[in-house]
Image 1 (cartoon, rainbow, N blue to C red):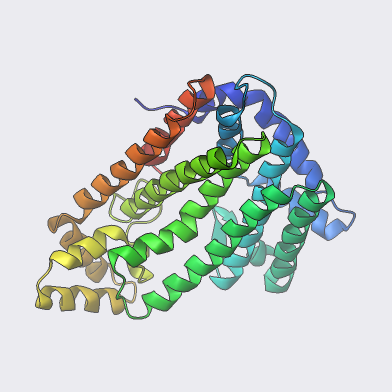
Image 2: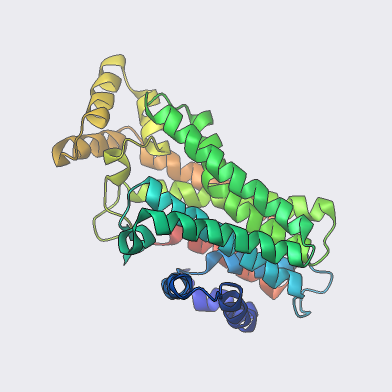
Length: 329
């Protein structure tokens, strides 16, 4: 069964609205240009999955799952949004990307120098928000995620040059690049309501498993149809080694492997070479294998989630896991 985000949000709908107001306040500045850019960032916000993971996990890990959430939970969600938005702004500069989620990027509208400074401002604003309220535990969790995001990106760049990524290295990269962020959301949610260290670690591991499934789903979009998700073959064009391709290459003969790697390294955006790689992956069982691994991570996430008491928020988290692996973009 497919769930809408409105259905999933139901137990925390009021808190999500409250968060939106608090998050806007956290981004206010007296510098007119900066305030204009902050307004632009808020307007183009996405599905708000990160705050949802924070609030739902906070309820699940709370001694009283139906009690109103405390202020640290809202600050924790804002801290994650500020620091993550900073990394996205900097990413767009590094990638020379002019668009994000169908909108012009900050660097496309205001050039690189301003975009880098905006990213720096968001980082410092997040740090200030945490330090003003002595939220050191939350800061420690989010700082770990930002460090791992950077390490994962650099590891991917290092390995992509030779296209020699093994499955183990791939999982290390996505654990750092994608899963660490969702893990920080769930850990912050649990920590913000005073959960034990053991419960916070369980919540973190739950988020990590969801993040792994989420990224594999993203990889699968590269082999889908043009109507859903990102443009087909974009990872191949950018020479990114994803799980379906890594698995398919493991099954290939030496000669097949050489041909496919040649097509990846020398595709130059050519549709025929990209399509040849996609067909090879499909015939080699790469998609089936990736789907099976995605479902394995989902099942592991659910097993951890079910160590927490039953509640409406836990049901919503179950639905949110399904949403992440059944989404169409």
